[in-house]
Length: 168
Image (cartoon, rainbow, N blue to C red; front, side, top):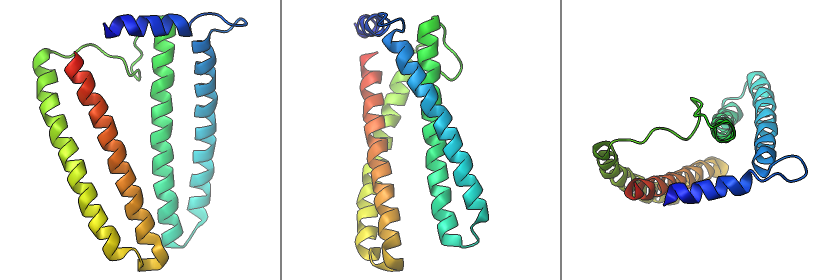
């Protein structure tokens, strides 16, 4: 059933509007954003290399790491859209071959373990947050809060994955 929904969605996205289909327009927007991400990464790296102070350099490195992840996500979405347009599955595409039922079940079990680990981590981070929120002019609070948001994002991704694994 999901495949039928995906085909309907793809069909809607591929309808031409003013010479360019919505999926092609989306692809163009993603590609433009991917180019901007690359330029911003270059700029961050340049500035980071010029900063002698450890704390700002560390914080910029955290931002660079996030920007690198963002670029990888955008790249995967671009590859997926290109694959859909060309009826191919490029290596960086988010579409792949279906796993065996045994592999899905095995990964489904581990996914629940990962979700529990992330939830436990959030509880620990919140304890650390209270204990260290006033340290280093609030820097620890910002860093721990960011880790909590990351763990919440991980849970969201794992729950999405778990639901997809159950549907297959």
